[in-house]
Length: 442
Ligand code: AMP
Ligand code: MG
Image 1 (tube, rainbow, N blue to C red):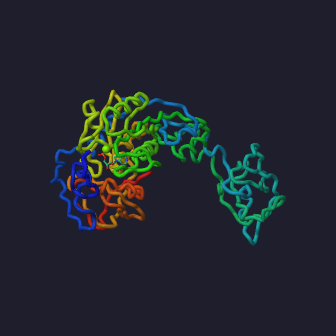
Image 2 (cartoon, protein in one colour):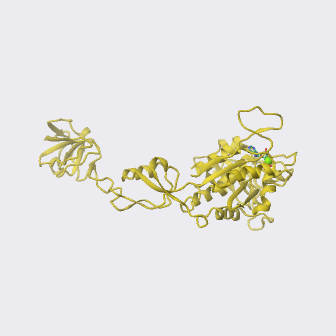
Image 3 (spheres, helix red, strand yellow):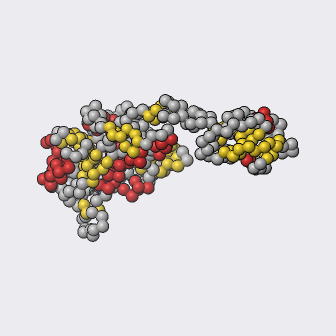
């Protein structure tokens, strides 16, 4: 690394190139020049996305299937369609606390002219027999309890006097009212969840509801997260002048876990090729992917580049801001993705390149993250020929920017809930312009 790096939108050395841009927003935007600008030999975002995805493609690396208890499936991808072993609901049941009746018996009932019936049974949820409702009687029934044979509707308790022996019913009901039909949600044998589905709260709830105690899932990918930099100090220790706290490791490890992987956070290493390679080799056999940060731009002491360029990892410049210096390839056969060191660059690169690849590799069909179109709350400027990702807060159809374009502004990223994507050919946008936002953390 060369000294005198100046981040945050000021032109300077090679890494400032990563952030180099016209001064930050506030200026009226220039109209874009679609189609006129090339990428000046830079690799396009889409091409690098494909390169990273190809590294982790399941065709290259058969995914292992494991049968796991539901409690250990969260965030993983289902490895086979789940068929319903029972219908849901399994039986006709009451949607209300009230009285099961024959609708014909309460025809014409009202507050002024209630119908009075004998209460012959009490059916709480969990009662497993099926007492038949005789004409001209009512069964008191609770929500979720089986509707008795003979009844075709439930009158809510609020429309009655709540009697236990005899009940006054103050309203008429159409057949089927307040009855949740067996199989309304799913029928025995129907597909409950499709192969590849990511298992979150609702999916695990549905699996439990049809009686699954375990599910077949793809083994999560193990990802070694390795940070580099002689300036780094572990949080909790005192800093000397020139040192900074190591933040990429915990950040990227969390990002890996959020994408359904298992993160193995390696101890960060100094800018020393020997030490770096040793740290890499020590963990290589037990992981599916190595994710490094730092040491890939164009300065001196670029430890990752120096160590891996000779070993089949390709280092490229991507037409993106932040996140220009990138690398991808294999080291001793193990996929390696080398992210830039600036924390915002590292996490934005993870979002754009690594997260989709990890999700795809875990089994599901490739899913683009959720995107929406929002109105820009303020003007912005963006470098020509680079796809810019600005940090924003989306709310109520509009998005305001947080922080400038600088790739060191990590606290601003922590306050953002989306990345605002500005296409390569756009150099400026006015307030109110529609922009694409990629929602973070969803
Ligand atoms: P590099 O890509 O190694 O030249 O680093 C670019 C910038 O990111 C420098 O300002 C580094 O100090 C910073 N940086 C690199 N790695 C980390 C890290 N793990 N945690 C925090 N900052 C980092
Ligand atoms: Mg470094």
